[in-house]
Structures are given as structure tokens and as C-alpha cells.
Length: 97
Image (cartoon, rainbow, N blue to C red):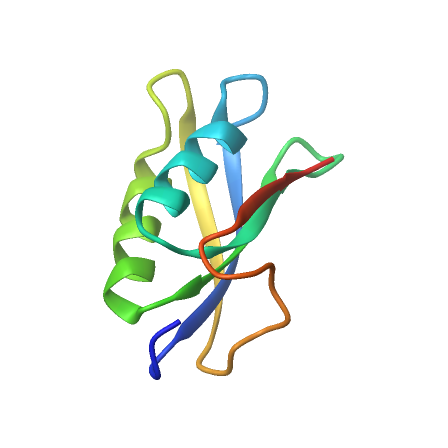
């Protein structure tokens, strides 16, 4: 990753499960060369963690706020952190089950 990284963790709420949201987030993250993961939560929300160059993380967040075509994002709660995390290797963004 670049010398300057941003890590973000978020929870997306709304109609975000059973609409391809995890695959959407993974596709966007891989295209932006981010590392991290995404998973469904029992309450119907989707949680993710992403790390990479600040401008790419910002683009990822903008796309996640929109969601895939079938989703209806109501809220996005974020925790930002400048320190890199122990995430998967560079450009690996996994779907967790």
C-alpha cells in the first residue's frame, strides 16, 4: 500500500442483504485496489472494513452510500482510523460468512 493509508470500518443499514451488496462492495474495493472485508450481520445490516489510499477509500465510501441497484441504503455509520490494520494482503478484499 502507499505510505499514506486510511482504514475505515462501516455498517450499512437499510435494504442491503439479499441484493448483492457484499459482491458489489468487493467488486468496487478490488477495482480501487483496497484491502479488507465485508460481511452480513444478523440484524440485516452489512459491515465492512477497507484500507488503502485516502482518495480511493473516499471513492469506495461514496459508492457504498449508493449501493447496488437493488439496495436501499438508509444509513452508513463510519469509524475512521489513519493507522493501517491487520487486513488481508494488498488488493485482497474478501467476503466473510
